[in-house]
Length: 422
Image 1 (tube, rainbow, N blue to C red):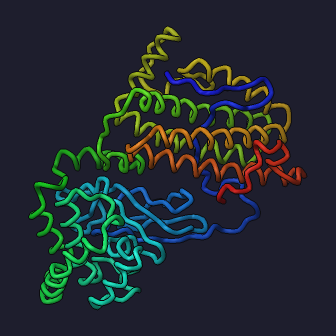
Image 2 (tube, rainbow, N blue to C red):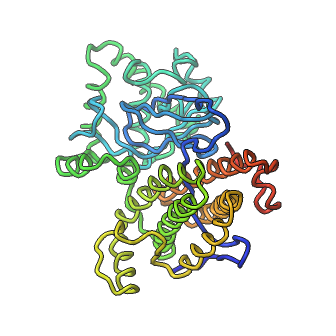
Image 3 (cartoon, rainbow, N blue to C red):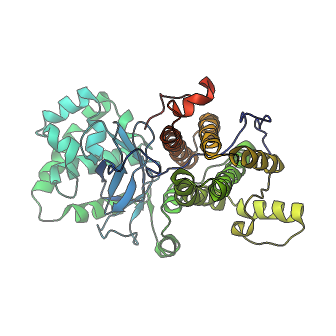
């Protein structure tokens, strides 16, 4: 098992929690968060990972629409998910795993093949000469606009045939080889009564040997869960992980559990909205995110077996591991020390939160390097890190409400991070 720097007697210098999305927990005032809806289409893509430049993750609200709760920083990108070929709003037989297909947008409200190409100024200018408008490229979807559908289908076919996953990597020279095909497909699409969904289904049939079309058994498994992280993780390939990467997953799950446990325990003796909301809303969700990875890489039984061996018990699920108990021995000492520090006062409890979240960001920076090209790990880790940013500001705000004017910065430069996105 990998070892991380742990805890000195009075300062957290070691590895703790792996980020959590607080959903605005503990933010200043009672203002409603800014809401931004983004449509993701190749047809509509369900259960994708959609994030902005700071790592803020959007939540799916249905039919390929994803909602950001906060001020969005462009560019926005997406990966994974399922192409909803029949536009039913659910995962059905004949839908397609998007896999590592990556889309992006530098402005606008739609992530599509068109918006991804339009991030390149030269390519956007060339597309304008074909009769597209800038508004079309950045905002229209294949479902509503047959010109955009034709462009999307021609480029999707090219990317699948040439094993291109990041459509932003397509060059002007490559686009030039596709111009006649784009124009021919636009003419055909505009001249037919078939819908964009019907045209896409025809293309899927032609590309069947090169894409992952869902069959009955796959759909049954996917529809047995409503957990967004699990569905997103399942849409991406299963990577050949190194032992270091596998150990990282086990460690992070333990860290997520530790964070939830210590925040709940501290909230029992030093109650605060920050501790309560972050523990019961975010930490629980992020444990589920990590468990989706543990399940995918067959690590749940490993953790259970480790716990049973260490405690001479016979539990069968992760949920049976008690609060404040961990399958990695260094974390037991860490939990005890955190609780002892944070239980002294309400200020000490919030300060512990600041330290936890800063340490977590530092750890996740390293974890993202460890993740390498495993995009399911990258997506989850990025989401966790943005959550830690969010929680840092929640604890910072809580301290300021107690009269600590400099918030987390009162702990010194190590824990003072005004550069964290809010």
